[in-house]
Image (cartoon, rainbow over all chains, first blue to last red; front, top):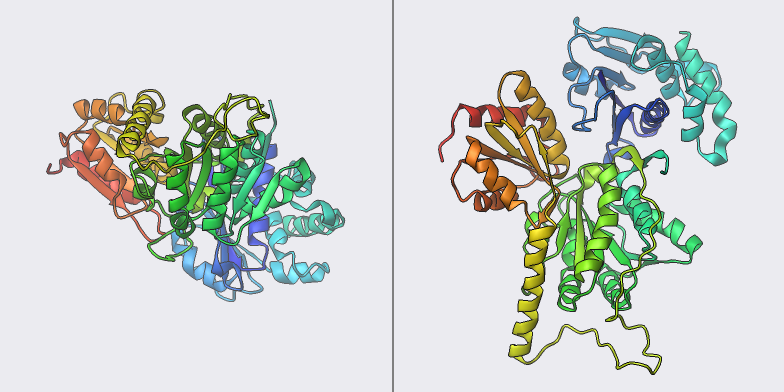
Length: 176
Length: 354
């Protein structure tokens, strides 16, 4: 099975970080995977996105053009990628920042007020990880296993004190 | 064996180079290869190596020239506009028969172009980007594992044949992360009696030079170099053949274009079209024989490139114009989609004009 995930939002929302977490989780689970960031001027204040592919077979193109999973952290991202999601795919919407509903009727949609939830637990910058928590809950391709180990790999050695709040954010999304 | 780690392609090149015994890096920052230089900046001082950010790309390549003359493993890296600046130095290194590694993580051009991935430096890399008759050994990684493996191979081949090698990557393979098993630490033991390391008053001076004012002598240097190139074309061609056994349509693509093409070939097979892929891993030497053999069997070729069509000329040459060759391309930092490639495969399968 191959799962193509596209995470998109503003630069600074931790889009690449969330993707890295999923990639490391895949690595720990000995899966085939790729992680491809958008790079360049859009990283600085504009839109950022990252493609993560998790698979049981070698990954072909690392570019996700037809995502099975879209995580939209802002309106421009939903506008841009909504129609690319494969029929039967999943769209995760940060409903704090995106007022509109998903127009597609052939996909599963999860509205999570992740920015608000992150604020509520005192971690306003971790809306990304709240969303990741929801993904772990709903998507069969990514499990709750190896959570801490994967997190340890992405949270830099200097900031291991942030492990706990990241875990809390993930669990908040998971239990939403 | 080392464990699997997750790394960016640019970082994998840097770590693999260090493990291959490279202790001297000279460069100048440019997107999208900067992580490579940053990695070197962090690691080299800790292992007694040199990281030097030169005042320009031209200075950096001439520092490479200098260290290469001493027989030490040395490299530089840049992206397209920066590699253009290095061409004079590369020609000198080739003319002086020195081994070195040059990495080009390509971006769209010409001019300053953009910063998104491209393969439009193919001509520059494979046909001799600087002046004079020379070649580089040009290796094209299609993923992070190959970024590491081909870096090690490039150093070995450069040493073996006493010539510069180039890793021709692109913004995607540089920026992406994939699991990679890094090559073992390698103790590099190639004898380099030509190196300028001090005579110890025991031997005549070695001289590193690319200046030969007597034309007979310069001609002989060129002939000798090309005898070596012939040997390389015979022995060092590398490519991957994917589903080619019964293929009617042969897709030819390297690097990121090959990754995209693989998806398209699988999709074509799913709809009953016998498609296959030949992925050159060395683009100089180019896998001419593999393509000539394929031309005996297939209806036609599709050359998939992130350029206006450069490798396609080598495909046409290698196949002797016996079969139609179609171009499927995007340029300027855009990347062909699997659907776009699939479309070209369908057209070629349906029969295209020669």
